[in-house]
Image (cartoon, rainbow, N blue to C red):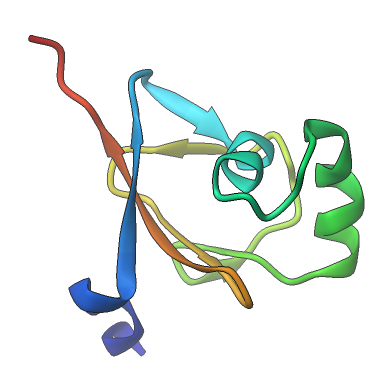
Length: 83
């Protein structure tokens, strides 16, 4: 099960805040074109956070979380550290 998260298959989604919501992540990954589409997308498609199905657009994604959007890609949330 964990082999699907091999580094070569995972893109980094770099954030400069403590967290982003799942809805924001869907927009940042170009899965949806506007934030208003998040509720619809999650009702029609399966998305996984840390290997578990997730359908809450407000779910907070933090540094180290793994996001799998079938058909779009796999992403690791990485918080950019301040300088």
